[in-house]
Length: 109
Image 1 (cartoon, rainbow, N blue to C red):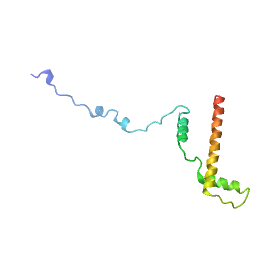
Image 2 (image 1 turned 90 degrees about the horizontal axis):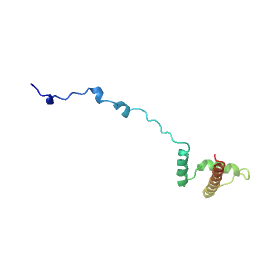
Image 3 (image 1 turned 180 degrees about the vertical axis):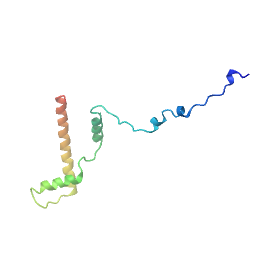
């Protein structure tokens, strides 16, 4: 006669062992949904820390040459002059956007 304590452990079925293994390894991860304005504020902080120019150099140079043709044809620009114009214009636009932001905050938008 065998005692009750000496029973052999039961074998688990293969389906029970592989429980939820397909949902954790495979599948597409859902994109995270942020509150309104969170991503914009993160981008603003990123651009405030950076020092590079926002406008590409070549299209800006084309714009300068196109505007200068109205005054005199076949003008040549030094690279430093183009860079100075680009720095000044971007500084102007940044100041303009700061003022626009203050106006938007004032109107509670």
